Length: 183
Image 1 (spheres, rainbow, N blue to C red):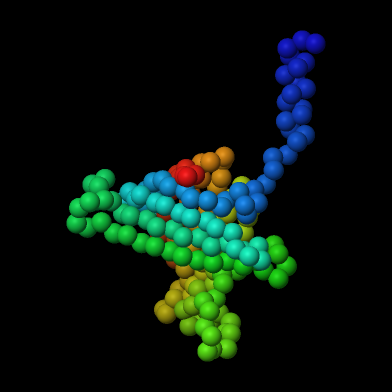
Image 2: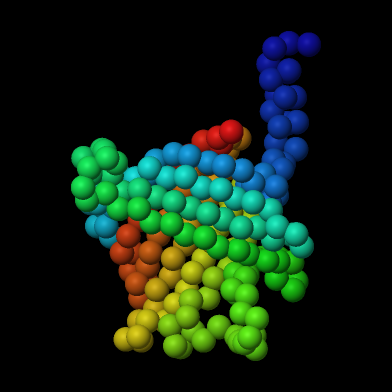
C-alpha cells in the first residue's frame, strides 16, 4: 500500500471517529496558571496568578474554588496586590442537561427561589464539548442587566480560560488565561 493511500485511510478514520466530549470528571483537579484582564476596548488592565480546584460532589454535582491575585508590575509581594476568591457549588438540574448553583444551607429558613429582580444572581453551568461554562445573570438596581460567562476549555492537562462580563449586552471586561493541571 502506498504512503498516500495510508494517509487517506488514516484521515478517513480520524474524521469518522468523533472526539470524545469531556465529562465532569475530566475537569476535576487542581489547576494553576496566569491570566490577563482587558477592558471592553481591549486595553490591558492587569495580569494575574490564578489557581482553581474543581471537586466532584455526591449526586453528580461539583464545587469550584477560584483564587486570582492581580499583580503589580508582575509582582505579588508589593503593596497594591489584590486577591479575589470565588467558591461555588453546582448540582445537576432536574433534567440533567445542566447544573444549577446550590443555594447556601439555611437551617432556619424556608427554601426561596432566586429573587432576580431584587438583584440576586441566577447561576448555572454546562459542559459543552471540552468546555465547562459557568453563567451568572443579574438584574442590577438601576434596571440594567449583567451577564458573566466563564469558559474553561480542556486540552489534555492544559485549561484555557475565557471570562467575559457584559453590561446591557456590551462587553465591559474580558480575562484570557491558561492553566495547567497540578499535583
